Amino acid sequence: MQFREHIVQWAEMTYAENPYGISIPEKYLYDARLIRSRDKNGCSISVANLAEIKQNGNSLELVARAIADAPWEKMETISFSPIFHRLVASEKMCPSNYVVEVINELDSYNAIRGVRGITDTDEFYIGTIARSLRALASYIREYSLADIIEYTLSKKNDGKGIFKMYSASVEQDMRYKTDIMFEYDGRLYRAWSYQTTRIGIERTANRIQRANGSGYNILFPFNFEEKEELCGWYLYDFLITSNVVKDLIVHKRSEIEPHWKYAERVRKNNYVIKYPAVFEVY
Image 1 (spheres, rainbow, N blue to C red):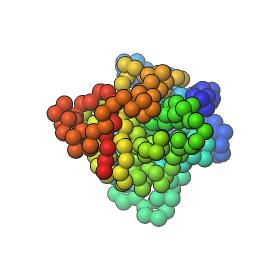
Image 2: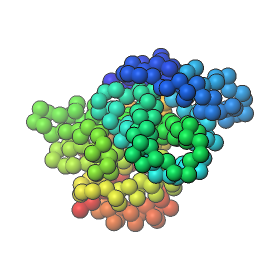
Image 3: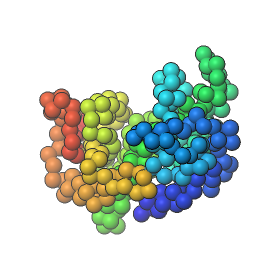
């Protein structure tokens, strides 16, 4: 599976390396404000900047939270998800190139609109880069889910075109507001990745409500107890998730509920649903 091969390749490079183009500008690459001084256990962190860090999942734990949580966190500036999907679609995704594109997007945004109320532009950029890296973990999980769905269902394809995966794109993300879209056996499915917490459920419910179009929605909660770890990234476990895909989509071993009935059951369970489910939006 190419996705996992890419992750292994990323882990061999530092953030100073970018196989797809220009490197991260040095003033951000070597800025110590991006890195935490201590880890979650209170121990000193030996690395000083991004240039010294490998592009693996563990690198996200080193990103400073204080500057990412600065007042501008809630400002509407740029969206990270379209950047990620654009890089995946062009087959140029790696964490360092993702940071480069975040900076380019900020440059374009500031050139058109400017950033009001910000006295330290460099600090604003550093904070936005930190937030973009913190968001990367969920995008990688989503990527791993799409990869498993495509691999599993394409193996079931009998040559009659019963399976079609819609590639992740800016249009899909912005127009349809859907993580993953695909067709199988004449049905359009929208797949949703989320963490099994009240906040994760509520955010996903809101996103589904804003999604455009009808179809079958399949929820894939991410359970850290059943995760696969690769180079520090937490991914959907291949075997468990592949079996879920076969049960719910291929063998249809699930009662498909209308969306209002499913929403009622979610509220009854205090929003925390920790198992996959399928429901239909008319």
